[in-house]
Image (cartoon, rainbow, N blue to C red; front, side, top):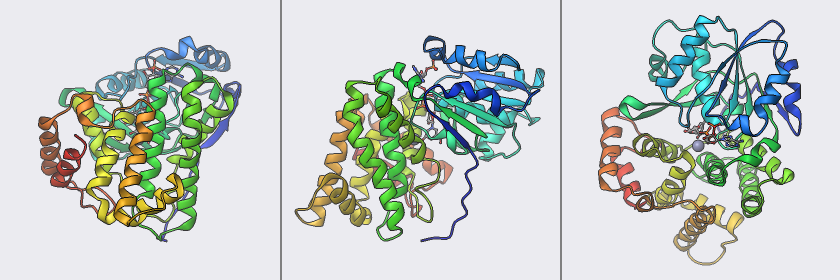
Length: 380
Ligand code: NZQ
Ligand code: ZN
């Protein structure tokens, strides 16, 4: 196990009706910028609950943070926040609204253009941010990451700021999610765990089993969730899986990969493909390309999750990849670039971008532009 420092300060407030606790979490007298997406919260009652809970606060609303939040939109929110001298932020929505609000919380205290902060990669001088999560997927409600896009140049980069001070998770608000978003959220959660698990064996028994516990749960509940999305216990489990998958708990002392995500972000930046859908395409191809070095872990995963116990290591690893791909398909997601209408020119563009940026991802920092191209060729 590697050395680590762990501190996750987000207060998690979980369960039916818990949005009613909101007012207690924001210090009295704060001027709150409340951020929203495109309007789903008006239809499912979340907006009314927030309005009611914040009736004694001075609030300013900002609407329209889109999926894969764009700097072009966030600049407007930052401007508004500066003008109104807000001193607290409340994000109400999915990962995109929360991510965007993390940049807003830094941008309001920054004199220059907020895109500078994205390029810098992190900024810890921020306004306090609380969140009300409406879509289980990203873990943004309990981590310090965000992913910000720029429409003008079709770029999408990770940015780190501070953890939300609190996040409220009421599973009943997920009942109105479009089924495609639920499928993408399940895939995203699955791949977050894999980015922290699918490296080499023998690092930590405990981390392996926590990760496998999340994956076991997801695989068990996914078919039922696809049948009936308004089941409280199932959605509660899903919501907690998503949060636990990317709040640092399964990453203690172990190496991490993240190459699937970095390639997936390019597919979203270039084609607008939903985040979880990009991962379902890239992960199987990445595993096939890097099978030799991930062999031990693929075999372990196959045995513990998919009950694959027969055959050579090579055969078991391949069977593990096929089972995982079949799981993504069972969610109704594409698992090949061709199914999403993506071809050679995109593969070459991603190779070029990685080479120009001189980046290399993965647990061994060896997923260069050339390796990313090989991976994407295996996703066709
Ligand atoms: O905008 P509204 O109208 O709210 O509609 C949203 C949006 O269209 C809708 N939605 C959300 N909750 C709903 C709902 N519709 C009905 N009922 C509800 N309860 O769902 C659509 C998608 O929302 P979005 O926030 O974009 O989805 P998600 O939570 O999957 O976030 C995706 C973004 O997060 C980033 C992704 O790259 C992407 O930009 N990620 C952030 C991470 C992090 N901060 O740690 C890690 C992830 O790997 C990921 O990269
Ligand atoms: Zn993700």
